[in-house]
Structure formats: C-alpha cells, structure tokens
Amino acid sequence: MAELEEIKLPEPIKSGRVSVEEAILNRRSERNFIQKDLDWSDIGQLLWSAQGITAKRGSFALRSAPSAGALYPMEIYLFSKDGLFHYLPQGHRLEVLGENDLRPSLAKAALGQSSVAQAPIDIVICAVYRRVTGKYGKRGIRFVDIEAGHVAQNVHLQAVALGLGSVPIGAFSEEKVKEILSLPLEQEPIYIIPVGYVE
Image 1: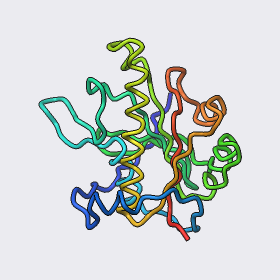
Image 2 (image 1 turned 45 degrees about the vertical axis):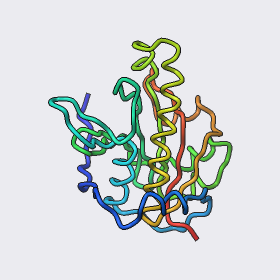
Image 3 (image 1 turned 180 degrees about the vertical axis):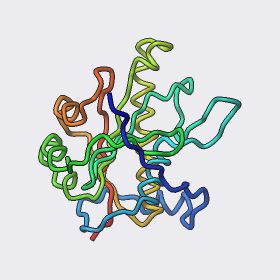
Image 4 (image 1 turned 90 degrees about the vertical axis):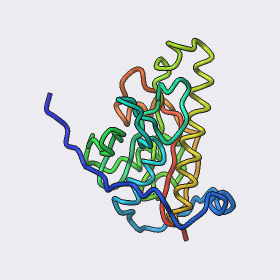
C-alpha cells in the first residue's frame, strides 16, 4: 500500500488575545457561513484544540482534552474543498486521505443541513470505544461520549477566539458518514462541527 501524503501544520499559538471568559460569553451556534477559506494556521489551531499535544511526561503525551485513563479514543477528521484529512497529534500534521470535496456528501448524510456544505471546513469527531471499554467496561462508553463533549467545546471556544463561528451537529446518519470517511470498523462518528467566517 502506498504511503499517504502528509501536511505539517503551523505550530499552534499557546497564548491568544481572547480570554476564556470572552470566548464562553460570545460562543453561539452559527449556521450561515461566508465563502472565505481558513488558512492553515487557523485550521491547525482548531485541530490542536481538539486533540493536540499539550505536554509530555517522559515518553507519554498529554492532549488538549481530558480523557479517561489518558486512553485517547478520539480520531479527528477534516473536510474542506481541498479534500479529506485525518489529524495526527504526534507531529501536529494531517494525513491526506483524498482530494475530493466531500462536504456536499457529508451535508446529505447530516440530513441535508446546509451549514455542513457551506462552511469552509467540517471537523468530524470519531471514537474507538474499545480503547476505553477495554479498561472500564460498559462505563467506558459514557466516558468516551463525555470526552467527545470536551473535544467539541474546545473547538467551539477556539473558533470564537479566532474570530470564527461554529455549530454543533449531532443529527446525521452514522452509517453514511462512516461510508463517506471509509472508516475502519472500530471507529464511530459522534459529532460534526462546521467552522468558518460568519455573516
């Protein structure tokens, strides 16, 4: 199998101009996006907020969102006009999975929600439940779902800090999203977040 192309993302900024309190105050679900592309630094910042490495303890890397047992079951995907990408926290990079614009297909899978097709990017949060249920049993399902909320809130607040809007999307066909992403069997899509500049 041929090795997939990778894109090294710009280093994330660790100190911004917007306080956490301001980001919380100004976060709203935004569904109307203007046709303006995000640059790689903003995309990288959003993905870092979702699952970026924030500290290292020996050979162990800690990430931006808390995870039960530090087991990190989340896999993050990016849809844009330039294609489909998989975020790799180690090295803060993107794995190129395809070069077609799949946002219209993703919008169709999200029950026709136009914001998914309209936004310059869509971040899709997927989970590998067995990474957590292997240690915590059935309770691990709850832990994974809670973690998806942590990840999503980071993305929403980071979007505000970057002067962007976002909207949480939970209504979609899991099977269709899995098909569009060609997901491995163990991965389950949980959340779609369109992000972009708003009117």
